[in-house]
Structures are given as C-alpha cells and as structure tokens.
Length: 137
Image (tube, rainbow, N blue to C red; front, side, top):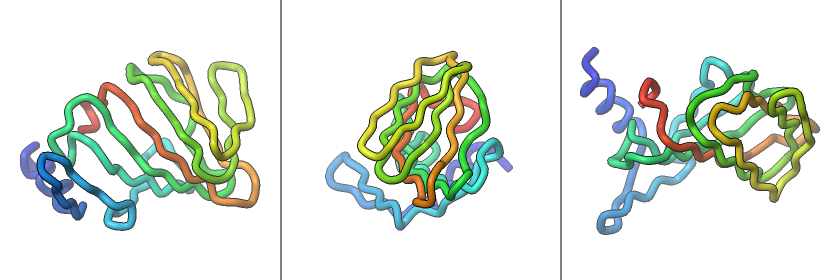
C-alpha cells in the first residue's frame, strides 16, 4: 500500500469540519485504536499529520480502563498530558507518582515513562506530543 493511499485511508476514518482554515474534530467522530504498547486503551487521534495538514504536533484523546495504560518507553518527542477524569500511576525513570483529574504533566524528550490507570473510574486524558513521530505519521 502506498504512503499516499495509507494517508487517505486514515483521513477518511475521521469526520472533519472546516471553519475557514481551521479543522474541527469531535471525539465521538473518531474511531479508536489500541496502540501496540498499550493495554485496555481506546486512543483517538484528534489532530495529526496523518489526518490533516498539521506539521508540528499530535493531539490524542485516550480512555483507559482499570489497570490499562502504556508500557515503559522513551522517544524524541516532548509530551504533555492533561488528566480529565480518573487517576493514573505515572512512572518516569525509577520514580512514580499518583496523578488525578485536573492535572497537567510535562515529560521531556528522551525520558523513560509509562502510566497505568488506577482506581475504578475510567481514566480519560488528552495527550499532546511534538514533534510528531515520523514513523507513525
């Protein structure tokens, strides 16, 4: 499958509206996936070079079931998380901390990190990272 064909296939998965030069995407109009290093996670790419003409960042909405999350990993992108609902156990390197709704988190590039949902409530969070991973566009 050509790169152009894959791009069009991804773009067609998401219903977008335009207001002038802006794109408007609703979470409910995006089909979720569970990425390979995640468990019990519904990840929805809202803004990404895969689906629109953005070049410098990616924004994802994630819903994570109890005990779900992402395994320890690191990469060249800076991360920002905003916890909307629920609690997570965040690990960076060898340290860990419980994080609750209403909390913003910054993870510098190259820092090993992981998280998992704790408690009975679903973990809902927004994830932003920059630059986009060229292999995942």
